[in-house]
Image (tube, rainbow, N blue to C red; front, side, top):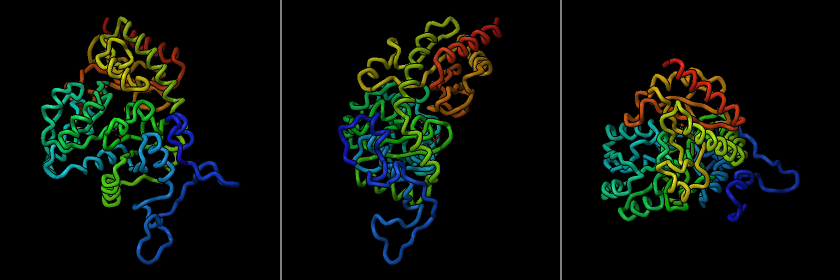
Length: 382
Ligand SMILES: *Cc1c(COP(=O)(O)O)cnc(C)c1O
């Protein structure tokens, strides 16, 4: 379907449907077959073997491409990290990559592993500091961008970073997991590659692990496709089907969770037992002005530092009854965790930082639970 004028909220519903004809199903089916009838030399486009290409991937790959404004289908992978690893494979041996200081922690772990095993030169930078980025760009092969970052919610000027990186001959990959394509479409800023942990808001129900890469560049896409065939981190058909099913309600879920997040951020910022709230939707947040210009909506994730340090943060997590103490984010259910409980989290992330993934529950129920947990943590200190 050629529908470039539809908004992302509509495309999430309409893209990747079977062709409209009498008797056609509204939803594509799940094809459970590892192989397909074929003989002789492979015919381009013909189904052959499920590690190469699978019919159940196509509707999701078309829908995500439409959402990210890509002329080429997305590529689905078995996890967000498989997608991140595929994107890093675009860096030549010994090439330099610039990664955000507060990138998703496992992306940083992978980058440092590739430094050890493939000789990549990994430079960490604060992407919201354009001068710092410009200083390390000459000779860089890939700039890895996350905006907002996980878990610090820092916002980077993506169009400016893309322009500077391209001037220096570097590719730009954007991990768009936090913003979702409803918040920003990095390919429209000139980014070369977009990566998603589909596990999070796109699938949205905490029931699948899945990843995807989107690029409008045919050469990059064929390299990413070849990487998927050879390294074999392919998605299962049920996971892709579930993710597409989840994607259909993306706009509703994000709108509700985002409205909840704004209310909670404002109330938490005024709470006597809270030291700091990071949320780009708060007028006083360092990323607010840029986010207001660049993003459609401020997202569903908050960073919150309760009074009383890491112990108080752990006490809050122990005291919630509605919020789920768990890692991951972007599901319909609200979750929280103290990020530094992971030894691999960046040491510059505060010890007491709680990452809150706001879901679609009633906001007053969410607020009452947080408030009682913050009070309980204070009671533990008194
Ligand atoms: C979760 C996450 C990933 C990794 O995705 P998985 O699906 O868990 O492999 C990558 N980037 C960001 C920003 C994430 O939040």
